[in-house]
Length: 414
Image 1 (cartoon, rainbow, N blue to C red):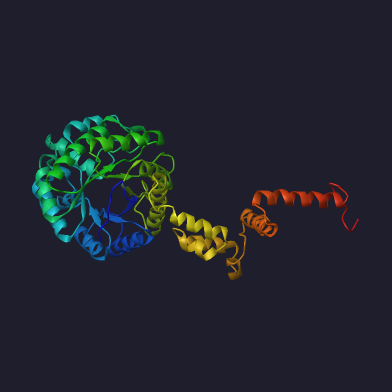
Image 2 (cartoon, helix red, strand yellow; image 1 turned 90 degrees about the horizontal axis):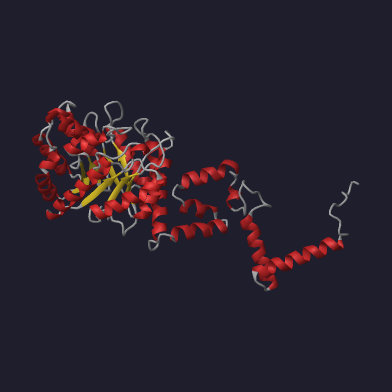
């Protein structure tokens, strides 16, 4: 199904799946794809690098109702036994055509990794962290030539146009740590991606620009501003960015913070990060956790942008929460199963779904129930809520005086 991606529309999210040389199977990847879409992913990328890459991609495409993206250089590398220096334009070209004929919707092409930029990464804390970027960097150094993705870019455009495949111009030199954010190499590549965007548009190819990476909060806006200016406002598609490097196992959170911010500033699509980032191949639960974190980030960005209609769901859920319509509150949430599970953990009885309190405050300290009581009192007295509070306080004062005006009352047993 078509998926509109642009900063004037709702922020979209992408889920990455794919096997590795160590783990996973076709069935597992198809299930992760299905699960990610059920949880709300708008597109899916197959980043398989292990065995049966063609067959894995075939089954993912056959079972997906959303656009599928790939990184063709991964399969091209597999065809030469993992030796980057043995890659050729012909092998890459044939891989592009093979994947295009299968029905892939968009390709990540790391054509911005140029020979002059590679030395700029020498003093980085984490060097080149993009798999595609490192493959192309190794090829460039082995041959001491510009990458064939850059020199043959017009031929790539012809193939993309012929098969109606969109570009996702890869950020092969993205920062892989906070220390490397917004450095010379990153922005040099961005300049080249702007140049390549204009060429792709000459062939009527659709283009997205991939972005970082690891960026602290105070440097995020600079990324968005530079991308809009340099790439002629082509849609920005960012991985996070992660706003700190200290939380392995929780990078779906560190990155969702940056994702919400850069989405607010104008990023069109956010590539999710799972809790397994930097640690291992994500499983089904990791995929769900990543998607939910990024659905939150994307929606928060839509609210901040003032996108028409973005707040309708918030308003509906808030109203159901205030009116203690528990089932409506569960069903309007991003993850109804977890919302219901957390509620039922302490109040599992069916009657608790009608109660005007939860286990946090209990029946006598629920602020929303107290507010409702004030409103009912005001309606009975035919006065507004603020006046009702004054009247109620006056009545309580009179009761206090009538009872003897004693701060401490003796108990009945005394």
